[in-house]
Length: 282
Ligand code: MG
Image (cartoon, rainbow, N blue to C red; front, side, top):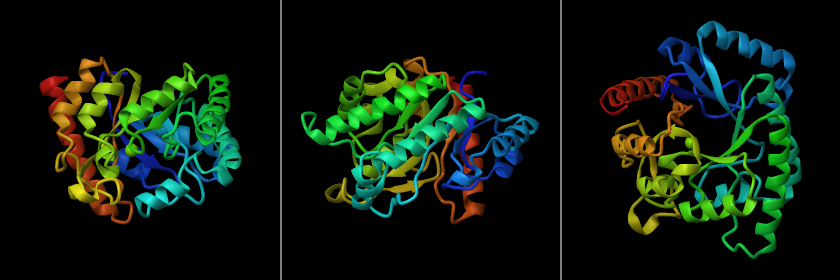
């Protein structure tokens, strides 16, 4: 694969990504895929999806897990419902995430991704330690499939994410860096965060956002916007990725599934911006 191939976050039948017809139309060579619903995680569905990707010249670079009952309605609800952190749903979601890893293997994909949830702040707490154990259990299954697990950023500060990765202590745990999430969740300046965690970054989202007003940060969402229109500074973002030797896909994410026409137009704008920056700094 060439350096910095353009990608886009895609959904088969679940999640907020664009559909594959948009990927084909825009000629985008790589995709991350939101895992399909359980009923469609079958060998037949995997074969059909691979065939379609092959015909379109598209490579699947990561399969993202997502679960029933998750809600990003506001930050408090996200903390309560998302990922492996909520204990009531953890065992079932670990089981499902292992199944998603198996499905990703059927797609020939060596990476699965996940919003793990809001990692408990206190490293000595029982809640933190049990999350470490659960994450290791999942990682060992993922390793048997020859895969890595990438944690999506945003719900923790860069420092706490580094602590968590250190404490889990598994070779196949890495980061999917999303600069806009740092702004949306109010967890820190994305460029400063990337400089801290850059050596663990194995995949990225190219997404942009505007900060919430200062006194509401961390309590109310910032605003996701088209790439280049927000506060990330995409040129500097790519320069810092380059400084760490990152050469993987630049996966565009635009989470406005309710407005497919605008989603497609904004992805077109993002492709043009990234192609231009690749020429100047790649
Ligand atoms: Mg993202």
